[in-house]
Image (tube, rainbow, N blue to C red; front, side, top):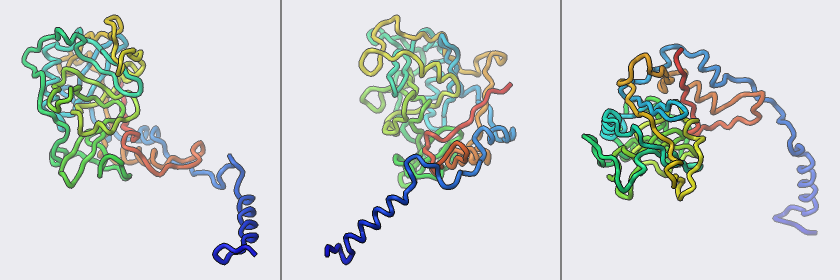
Length: 310
């Protein structure tokens, strides 16, 4: 008689077959449907005015492109020198008439001066600045931590609406490369960027770039105008012909635009109870459409509701 660790092989085989037959058929419905739960839309609908904050016009940029307006909210808490320099560039009309020069599939859209041999001169803005990859945690007083683990940082969450991370051991905090985040282009040198070349993430979050590039903000509105641009044929998605460039009509600080012409957006406060409910609505979705709740949420998939005021 064949025996495996004191178990009769024939009996083991019979038990395995019986167990296999007892398994539900592939594609069978779960034994119990998930209960219905509030959705993010439900949370937004039930929110109070105090759950929202208006954009600060002095830290908001309007980039006008052929398809419309792209609105960027700046994050001076995390990159104060670069944010100040970018606003100086905008106020000195540096970007007006320049172009979107790169669209790389599942990666970034980038804009700046397409003429590297004879670049547009700057006025009082700086061509390069010391890198601002991280800031001391004490500088970030609006951090709301997410409940789940992250593969790139000990702690992740949102800082006044911006996806961010922090490391208590080093005492440093930083913005993360989620969809829609805006960063400063640079060469190999850490201090080789200043804000005259900017990019926005249009693909899967390249979190390995965190703490390697200065991140200055995120696009609040207008991502479809950027994400649908034709992909550049040259290496890394650059456009190799002038006619492929997408012109920038103007690039302004919202505070410098007449109030009647400003876009009126507000962002859900990420330190509010409403936002915690929105996160939970995504972490544990209810039925009837959802069959298996994830019970987890990734930083770059956590919703940050934005709405336009009527």
